[in-house]
Length: 569
Image (tube, rainbow, N blue to C red; front, side, top):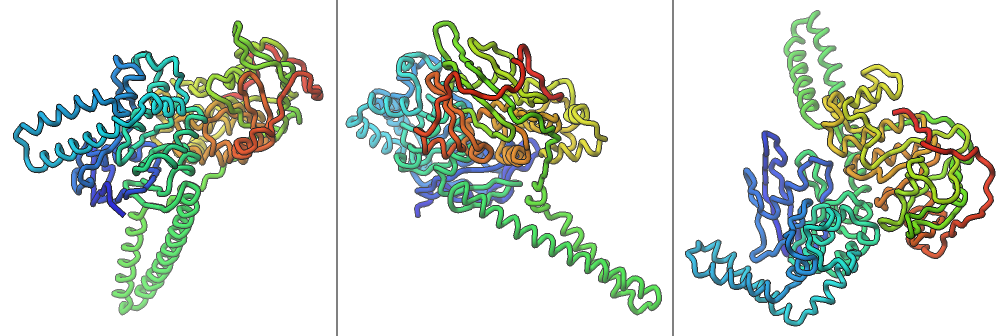
């Protein structure tokens, strides 16, 4: 299989931080690889090395001759003066734009160039000629319609300058233009940020069935990785490991590797204890008989060497991640939340028609629907932050809401994680530290102001505080945003321990499948109830029950007005 990109013994340090050391990997033709690692592990830096935007401190990154790479950065670099149509048409192979690029390369060929530069320019010239030839047979409008339509970018805004778009809209245009360049390799750094479920599904299908080149993808969307990837690159502690298959296969293979490492570590610890016991026995004998002194000294040296080797060997990740969390939750009533005849309109626009909804103790419901369908509006109504247009929303007796906000608006930014945890539940400093370490906090970070924490760290802190809150109804608004995969897995394990009711908005389909047993869809003003998780919902689109006004539910409590009772943070 043809090698497209090869990294050989690559080391790279930045700002005194060693990110990679003697790392090697290969991207082959036909690979659809996902790069997985914690936030800050160096994934984006690795992409920059692969694209040769930066050079390694040692080692080499080589490309197949004439390789065309399309590199989608996290931050958009669109020309704000160009319209959406102009931007995407140029990428699709607009003949005028290609002719201009060809003229520029031909001018470069008239200049003094070394052999390597001459070869690169000639390769680029040849590729442009091929694209120009293909462009003459293409139908740009049809291509734009296929890609921009698939990504759900409104056609009536194609002639709007990209400088007037929101960050999410610019991301859609960015992805569209890279798709239409049809390079040999696509490096996609978080391409699905700001995408709704339909846009993600279209991109997955295009990468899997239409694009013929190689792909390397950074994403926190495990569902997307499952659909697209045939190879996983795991980046951990500056080392890259390669696993065959998609994300689900990777989880099993990784777990097996970690278990082997943990068994080996346990064996090494037992061997060390044997050496220690032998050294202590020989030392005791040597006190009574000097002829044992040399053997005792040798055994103590072996023991010290083994201890040093163990101390310098990283603890297997399996041991670092065995986190068990328990919610301190009161039972509360069976009927947790009742909505009767609830409708919402803004002026002439109906967000959703009047409907009834019952959420019971133990329900785990995912709230889904297109962007703008009204999911966040419904959550604000439940929280008492937005009035209903019709109907009432009531809570059962002894129901306390734990609310997770997208913008971490429930956090005191002047406080520290340590202080907030101890304020949420009485505990000493060591107990609070141990609790926060379980949520992947470094000890130093627990004493920093919350305003200095990253978005992911603030999100993890909110999750930790929810666990301590005593709430028996969790309302979660995009809880996996800003979290790396390891942090999302901590959240999932925590929620699976929770015995109360959950209502969560999320675009993370893998998370919804893992946590939820019920799906509530808002679409075109209609609320539907599906008795299964996300995969069941997506494969049974006609089996949802429309929630209409007039359904009979038992009385739970008098109608709640104003702000809801929230658990203390």
